[in-house]
Image (cartoon, rainbow, N blue to C red; front, side, top):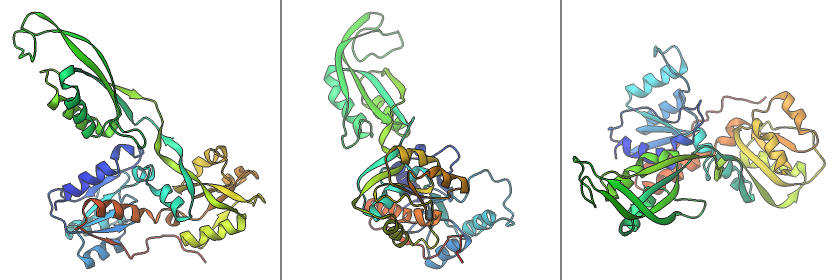
Length: 364
């Protein structure tokens, strides 16, 4: 298949609009019309990973961490990123990344961490904000089902475990067609009143273009009237971090051993033990120190994340057990998420896990 087919699917399945402003998810290197046959999945993009892709005949490297975060002015081979780009281009290897947008997905990085340690009753810790829109349009009664279904098929109307969510209210619309118009109903130059239905639904920001296209193409009027409003509602399905409950309470020492075993953490750092059992757990893959107060407010007994600074450990203040088990260790299972998403959509596409250990941190 073409690279654009895979990228378009990933851009939608892990919406680019979900990423943080500083991030750079999506296609970073590669020609969209290139034919691809196999992919290599890795947490990071390093020269060794590109070498592995060459050796295995992979056309694209798909990573969690982007190769490029900021603009690049020179590609001379004097930097690691420059050498990687040069090698990838010379060997016709594309590079695609899903970073913070994968972090906030309902089936994202923190959620798979929770599954790995057997948590139940899993919920988002900090809900995704400012990504919802409300669509309001006005449809002739006889065309309500056709137009609303097209809008739903384009992705609008999903709330939690429900889809095709909308609201309709009958009313009367008015208009007067100009001389250059081609009205569906009514006559040019005459005021016309038509029984219509006010139809409302919600959508994500990244769905806007596709939903409006479906509306315009199926609406019978020459000029389809619609309004779009930004919503401040939280989205409880997507967001940073998550919480969940262990099947049964364990001691803090048992919990630390569980984390070490599941995540392969060789150098866990943790705050002073509280002396309490661990039942409710909060997690955030990668650098999650900013969510500490949210974890405490959620009533978690332990918070598992990485990149905790020295002074942040004081903030535990005997209220919670902070567990820093490493950035690489908390995010390495992101490769499994990417693999499952791709295989589900393209079962005949060859997808391989990288065997290169990209963790830059070593322990003595």
